[in-house]
Image 1: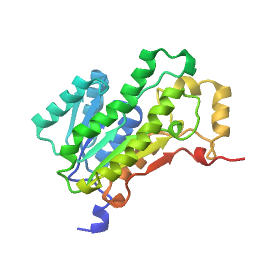
Image 2: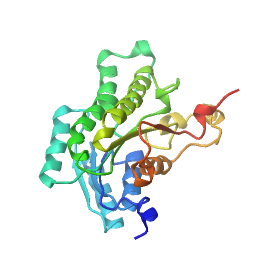
Image 3: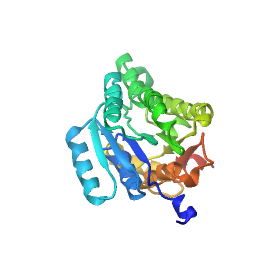
Image 4: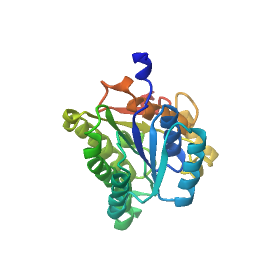
Length: 260
């Protein structure tokens, strides 16, 4: 077997992907399956999740594709996910924390319940998923976590302050866990997308004036596709990336490098 070729494959890995029923999560699941990883898919929408599971199982008949409907912002649901994994005796070696959401608004307009819900979904859920996954990941020789952050965690973007705060904290969580868990053989990285063509971005990008502003600030002058983020996530999971940890990789068409 070609060792260099092996470095670009994920056979023998099992990936737990949250928010897997659409957008970046779905594209990531498809990319990981194409590289040979078995899949454990989690999302809130049971019907959409089952449709994705069937589709991926049909398209990739050489990998196992299983799904469990859960809201990872709910502590009981998170525990249920890992009870399911324990029952399966599934050897989880990759975790992709993709579940997230937002309610853009002016800072003074948020109710306490609204901004706390954004923190629960975007940050605390990922933190707890990492903690719950740790015993599983530590048993694998080439384990990895990839957190889906955002350019909003690095600079001001008109997505609302709570969203940016959660993503900035996720980026720092990535760095801390990378150092703390390196001794356990677990690499921890993140990706930071700019505008990606998903259901969540459609309403904002439907405004032609706003779209023009976005494109003007993007050196590649286009909106990214979910598959482009998925490719970056998959790379960070690969053995080929075995010396990369604690990094936040911008997938942003050059947005963060824009100057004047």
